[in-house]
Image (cartoon, rainbow, N blue to C red):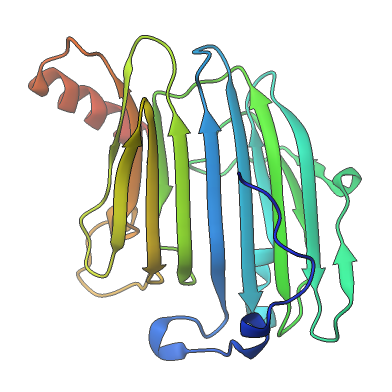
Length: 238
């Protein structure tokens, strides 16, 4: 079950320090987990949870939460807090979420709810939410390489409707992951995901960020028509 972690730093979290050689100079995502349920075929219920250690105020963007809201979407539940180095806890309440009319590339929906958690060097942030909406996207892309490393990643998806749901795990150096089916559901897990680094002559950034692709497809489609259709959908998300 996707749920908040304890509102105290663990002994290990207290000892974590920057590791520039592995991309964690500014911070590290300790855990990111998503549970997406499309079982009804007509609406989507999503639970999201992130916990991160922040080493530098330069990584203040880790504390910026953006929740895309499709049509008829609502936030059913929210939690968010900052665990300060001195042991104090700063809570961010659901009432602090504000609508942002600007939707970035790759974000679903027509509006975004945003809030910024308090961030200081040495803190741990923990936040999550549950949303429900009537949108069931045929294609979902999740970048596995972020601006900071990810220690543990988990995505549980239960497709719905008549179409089949499938997953494409990216082939990229340094990725450790697994895709496991549990009945109709799919569970994607990965550990120690490296940070995204811009390099000369690298592939286009959408590919260099190691996209995990979750998609629906018609069981009767041929291989050729399926991949042409998927390519068209992906080009529309760029």
